[in-house]
Length: 127
Image 1: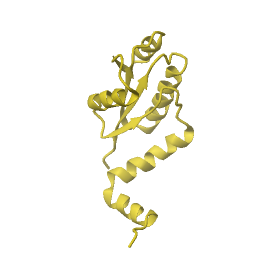
Image 2: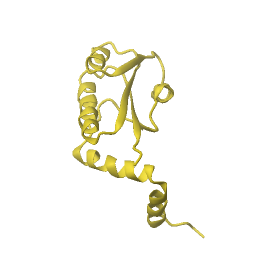
Image 3: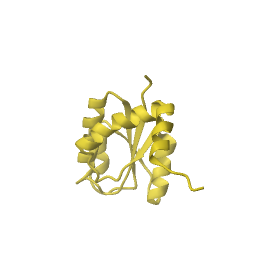
Image 4: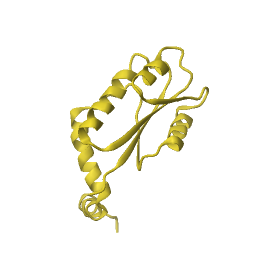
């Protein structure tokens, strides 16, 4: 079966205290899944070690000073190569539960017939 390619997009500003844990949690769970992924950090001109930490973890980083968080997310989306875009804040750490659920999401998105069946069971339409 086909599998997803996922782009994680993380806007950041002075997140040296958090960004390493965020990236490591993504890498930990995604390596376990075997799914194709990338991490993109869009930095808003950090004055701390944010950019250095990101680079040391082997993640691509692009600096764009002065944009809103929405603008930074849009820059990341433009750079993304994945079929699925996941936007995270720089202080978010993925959990074990997330690691298990990504396989369910992969199965649903790659098997549209199954997705539509699931959607029909979980929704109702107002008449």
